[in-house]
Image (tube, rainbow, N blue to C red; front, side, top):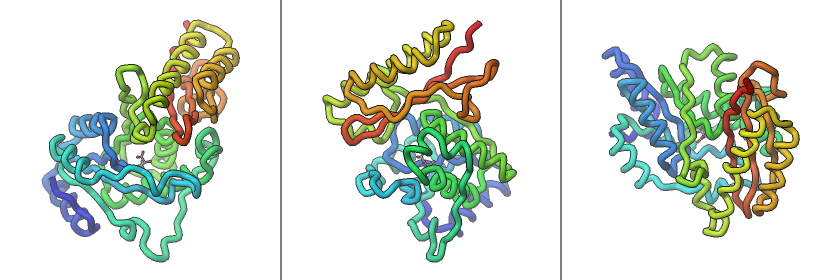
Length: 280
Ligand code: PAF
């Protein structure tokens, strides 16, 4: 695996593959890789001959009181995992290659970026959209893969790609989970053992609400019960909602729906989401 930190070297490698008629996949990450990321890499390998993984802890998507400084950084372990997984190129840009002096562009996607996590983390999705647009233009992949765990992020990136006519296929990859159901996340590393034990309440509460709604039960009552379950387990709840899977606005009969939640355990904010089976 080549590790590349400068744009001309990245462009050169990608140009060589393109000249050979090879398809290129991009897996954008912020590092601290786990099996969830590796599922993206495996899907990328199935989708293209060449796989680029980017690692960049993007300051623009962290709010002033968020965990940018303590976000886990594991370059050596990440490099080993990506090499073992057969990744062709690790794109590891220094901050000045992403945001050179004078950088003044902000990509803001209204509506879908402003609800749920966007309401709780103002500016977060502007930071994500801006860096993803930049990474797309640097790598110019045929396909880019993102985890469904960050469902709203995936929806924002689909909107960005459609709105800007970017000729890049966006593939969502199902959430990878621990044996007890907790969604894999780099932020799980912050949980102390007691919180880790409490954290399982999040996927369980979503699963219970999903079964109630899928059986035709009252969605509002199911969501209220999920919130109460989370509070009883020690969470502070940001939201538990049922939304249209694509637009994240109010669910519309006949269209795919998603249950989404964000809740905090101590200083750690966890998010999760699951599809809701359509009632017969
Ligand atoms: O999901 C992530 O790790 C980040 O939000 C992304 C997409 C790499 C942009 O920084």
